[in-house]
Every structure is written in structure tokens, then in C-alpha cells.
Length: 387
Image (tube, rainbow, N blue to C red; front, side):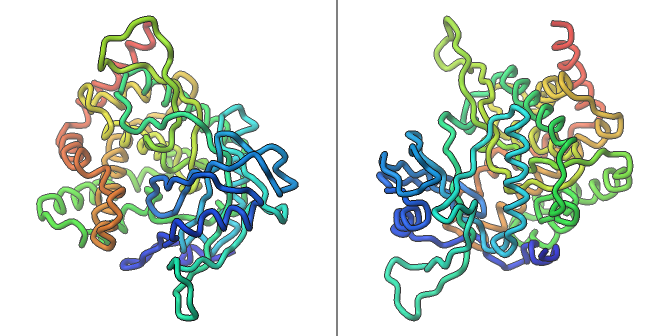
């Protein structure tokens, strides 16, 4: 197994693959025996993901009937491609989750009957002896049709449903173990919040930088000393609006522009799965759902997510005590790393998704006293319990 240093991004390191679109049909054909009809790049922070629609013909003995909805070709970032055991652990996790009744993408075998392969990929469409290249892990997963929660109008009951599925996921994780996760960590694990200081160079505004520093300091003071009271499990690590597939629940009549209630069809993208403190996953979910919410006070989002979560799984007192600081810490992670990644690669505008609404939210959440946040969330939870 590679040590943790091999899986930890360094300051100044660019890890996202450079893959010309022209190479995608060839990769799918040569590795999976499928003919690509259309290809669309999907948003991704550090990896390259493509939704490919294929013809009905297959030269792959492991694919008798190609999926009409297509597949997702995933090209893993340079750092994680160094450790195939990382992907094996992720696949074991996906299979375990599926067996516990939570919808997730299925892993597709290539022509050699393998779940993944390490491929030499050139960084240019025109290949010569001097064309630069790197080696990346490539795999194929089934595409789950539907819409992500990204840009969906936020209904409180949708947040309740998301929290409930997250609780079910954590319940399922109590019976899962893979040796890879025993020693693995990475930059986006909330245990690594202190390392954000190394990446503050990307935050140009001094007031914003001071806010981020204050949150980092508080995490070290208020959360880290309580680690021994927090439960651990394998967590998803990135329960954001783009990793939740939803479907709208049919209703007889909804006013134009009014949010519709969404149910969760599937959880996707387990690239950030890690053994960590379970409450971190709840905080991550609340952070991203709060950033997404435009329909009501963002500080109330956590109450609706928690109400759904607590309907299927309990939290201890310490987990509730540290939750607000953990939410702010995740917002800080997203803002600092987004600013830094854009600083290093101005073409990667996807990383700025959080920025416009994230900076005002970080300030609002941080300046709202703990007791007020707790009061808001507890009131909402009680309202659900009394339904």
C-alpha cells in the first residue's frame, strides 16, 4: 500500500488529468468494446468524468446488453491513480452500499474482466515522440438517469429526505471494513483542516483570509480535543448537490416557480470516502445544502437535514455540540481550496461554484452564535417530530 504522503496533494501540485475529448471514444472502444455515439464531459473537481452514450452492439463478453442510459467513464486524478488499492476499496464500498438497499452506480468490467486499468494517456490530440503523458486509472460505471440536486429549488422536505438517506448510509457503514481505509487520509478529510493554512495564498482578500483563519483556529480548539467522544465510520466525504440524484415527487398542483419536493434516487461519487468521524459527513451535507439554498434562511437548512437524519439514526451530545463549527470548517475548506485551485488553474471555473454564495454564508454562519443555531435547528426538528 502506498503511504499517506503518496495520497496527499502538495502545494503547487496540479493533479487533474488533461484528456483531449478526442481520446474518449477510443478509450471506451479499446478498453470496453463499446462504440460511443455521444460524449459529454461532466463537472468534476479533481478527476475527469464523461457521460457516454453507446450503440446497442457490444464486443465485451461482460456486457451483453449495453445500457440505454449510457455509462460514466471515470479517469482518476494523478495522485489517486498511484494507488489501485484506493479504487478497490471504493468498489468494495459501492458493492456493500448496494446490498444495503441504497441505489448507487454499478461497476462495469473491461474486456479483460477487470474493474479498472492503468492507462497511458497523452496530453494532446496530436501524438508525437515528445508529447507529454501521464498514467491514470480508468474505469466505467453505469449512468444513473435523473437530475442532480444542483440548482434545484430547495424545499425543506427535500432536505429532510436527503438527511434520511444519509442516516441510512451511515447505518449501512457500521458493517463495512476494508483495510485500505485503516491508514488512509487525504486533504479534504476534515481532520486535515489545519492544512488549509498552506493554501490561503489563493485567497486574495485579507478580510476573507482572516475569517478562514478564525474558523481553522476554532476547529483546532473546539473540535479536535473532542475527537475521542465522536463516533467513527467510513463516510461518503462529499455529500454535495452534484452527488445526489433526485426525482421530483408528483403533486397535483404547484405554483409556477415554487420548489417541488424531491426524493433521493441515488448517491454517487465515492471518491472522497474515508474512515473519519461520522458527524463530519452530516456537517458536509449541511454545508453544501446551505450554500445551495436560496428559498429561505440558510441557517435553517441544518434543522431540516438533521430532522431526516435523526429519524433513522441518533447522534450523541458531543456530535451535536461540534456540528456548527464542523459545518463552517467544511465551507472554509471548499472556499479556500476552490480559490487555490482557480489560482493555479484559471480554466477550472467549476471550483468556483461555491464562492458566490459560500463567502456570505461563511460569514453569516460564523457570526451567528452557537445557541441561536442550536435553537433554530432544535425548533425545526421538534416540528417534524410533532407531525
